[in-house]
Image 1 (tube, each protein chain N blue to C red):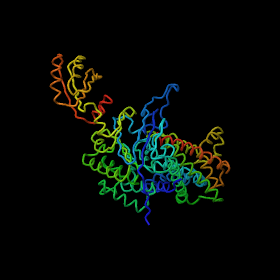
Image 2 (image 1 turned 135 degrees about the vertical axis):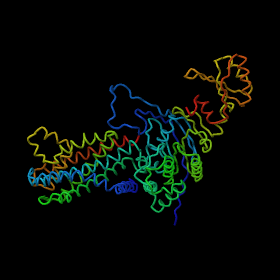
Image 3 (image 1 turned 180 degrees about the horizontal axis):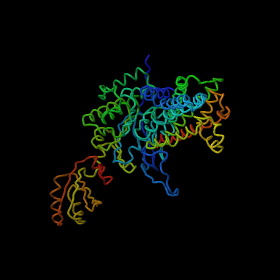
Image 4 (image 1 turned 120 degrees about the vertical axis):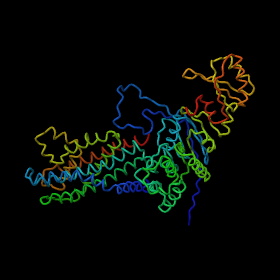
Length: 347
Length: 256
């Protein structure tokens, strides 16, 4: 008789997560003989990675953490996967407290780390088989599932070679296959499509969607707008360890005032011009950004794009300021990020 | 405790060890066998050493092989997997408490140390014969000492492997293991240090002293050796200390 265990989708929650690194962040170089601080009273160099992050990821959704490098995405994933101890706050996978009930949590999750961490002493197939064995998958099931995943990720012809010699993209595919090997209820993917060619990226997206449709919860981090937009049901935008916006990609994009963003450069800074720009039809916000290199730019959020340019140029001419550069972007998460942080995602 | 996971972790290590069997054997036996050949055979045959030295040397060589094997088997993979390749992360995510992974490494390293220790006896006997007089009076005592020495080597490997950075591996061998071997009463009995009274006391902090003296007492009791109670006490204390320190270091490394 086949015993069917009905697995309910599992949610993810965090409350006020704070993480301060006093040494170099996760597993970076350095060991036990690291040089000691000369002056014991001098505080260690502290890096605030998370600053009170609270998230609620619903069971069965694809949730994205979007943010620039160093925003705290990987630290969040690290805490949720038992690999990083939070300084304060709590995290739960389903009903299990991640820090207090690590074994139960580890059973529920599959993790794809940002950097490949494959077992280089094993072949691709063995990596999957042993991973299954760690999770108590029985041997026949293990072989079948490994073969299926190798095929799905187009690794069958290299299956019996050591993973050491794989290309970056192949390692990434194998890492994802491994994370799915024990059929976890929650899948964490830290920058899953980094280093993948466009074709493989599409394959990965398809696999992620399929996996989600079988009732699994997926949390992925990305700084790729297109990916977040294409995959995620909901997104949190993270910057400096804080959650600065949350919602569906569509809602978030709609929340950017005006939708269109015109980034302008003028020959000189004129407060009078800025005031007059605000009076143009369709303009909802004008922001002046002084930049570190002495240059400056002006952002205009508006509900139209190209048609504004001639009006702006006219206004500028009327205040004897020269318009030197215009960049128009359509409503996008990129603009959203810029709106909330004043910085571009790629910076 | 999740035995399925624990045995799967052991199976993985055994699989990897099997794959690198030949280099593993060379690395374990080449150096001690060269030593046995030069000191036990060349020096004795040429008359520079007395014939009894053959029997005296054997337990010391066995202790060196065991310590070297256990330390190497546990420390080297840990140093690499934690610091550079992160290979260990997959096993840290296996559904078992993190410290069981460290214990698994120690069990596997200790098993390897037992195998290499037991293999030294026939190998050295073949190289040295005739003239090796082994006198195994109590197999239980021999088994007890061998197990404690194996645990010592693997726990030491855990402690070193979680404390030493990749760039310091060479330093680990030249600064820790080499002095340990030379001051470990491996090539001479502890009583030979009687004319260096301070050194004789100081070497007692070297756990290898209890390993080689213990094996000497169990295999060739006709030579002077530390009393059995001192050997067991010394080995138990160092086993416990190194294991506790190693586990603490492992926990620190495992989670950031």
